[in-house]
Length: 598
Ligand code: ADP
Ligand code: ZN
Image (cartoon, rainbow, N blue to C red; front, side):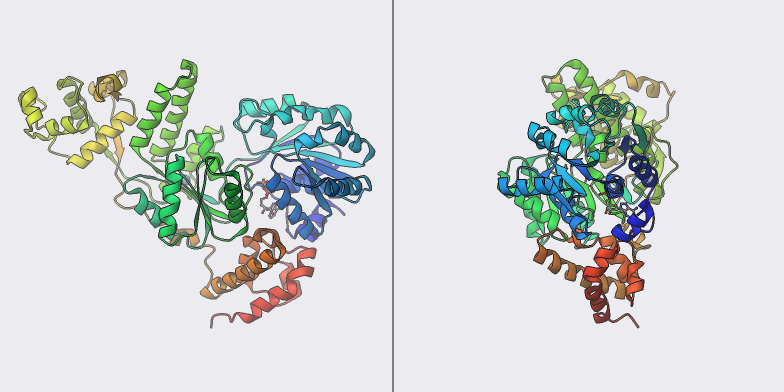
């Protein structure tokens, strides 16, 4: 069968996405490929379909056991003979898989890298018929990356021992350095590179200033009832408390961090993967290897370390291409804490400079009044127009010219001797004769009482912005007093203007807009819920994650189109031959059981 027929009949999708078609035909024809595609871009099909087209077995190297299990379960659901070899199998089970492999009974075999590199398995492969090698999460070979896996360094042996077998390396980690390391270490100099755009158009980015974190989070979660999502926190303790109060608030939340025992962690990850609508409250220890397609939101309650980190974490939302949200709260206090953490660490000066620069880039993203996506993609070297699907595009923030107040604040800091914190400086600006003001004689300064145009809250906001933009600095050696920096000069000399965002009084509601395209008549919503319940039951019986049965996107399409025949059902994306055979009758029954709206 050709690639397109396989896509339709086996996977039930009408067309390839982006570069998939080109990658599939390149690989099927025996070429090597390096595929850079964002999470959710559809990397798996790029090697699964060529493996079906070529004689023999496609051997897939994957670092994550849980991921292998779900991929293999999903392939079997599609009627594709697939298996895995990793430490979770007993010796007898492993032997059975090896026999099937040698007998040519498998189309896809997932293998952990340490297993692949054993002499025993290398020898086995010389006796088997090999369709291709797929190296998933190829960035694990990069020694400077945070996912480095030493076993990946041995994978160039595949090329040496099996030069005639095409190889495809895949990753969602984009930066140039990592790309170069992959090419060199995996010996892929002759491979064709397929680099997709890293844009994730279905993810809506929203960034808000932290005011009342709990209330803001609850408000956000209320926009996602019954949906699965991840809430990232900056510390283990915070994970515990947030998970506890969400549970108290009646929300299905589970904690996850590296300090928990391995068994509980595994259980929580498993439940998140398998059950519908759980909220995982976690540190960044959670995420790698989660390929749950229907994560509807990722919330950050604390600032991530870098834009790369933010993009990787938010990328776990919306792999299925349906609308998803990345929502972040940030506070100036967190930022100051991270700066202090970097400054007081034992690291080398060069490392500290990099860490500060990464924080600056993140700050620019947080502060921008322009399109968030544009800023994000620009960071990864990709130009793009404003997206229309981020908070700033949807509700452009208003700016006001704060040049004059900013100059007043800077001179108040200067005239009071660059040794006081924000509270005292504001007292002086507002002309408050406190004891401290009198003790220092500050009521006699020319700046005393010149700041009547703003109230205390807005002065605080302004000083924070001056700090954030580096025009003021906190003097940690001198009790945290504020002092001027070089960067303040142009503003003081009147050579620069200082624009500020109008603080959002209330976080804006975006649910209605977000749901609009997908929001069908209420009858469809009811049908969708019924289909989900049916799927949950079935997934439970089979012991597989719900999305392995059918994806949310497929259920949504069914709920909206209400197919009333086998033929109509077959036209729904995601309903391949095997799924039709197994589920068509039950699905049509569920549809009949839910009356359409009058
Ligand atoms: P990645 O590994 O790149 O994160 P996956 O291979 O898991 O992405 O695919 C992401 C989702 O997109 C899956 O749910 C997959 O079934 C779906 N998908 C992939 N290719 C297509 C396609 N051509 N048409 C429709 N859905 C697709
Ligand atoms: Zn935008």
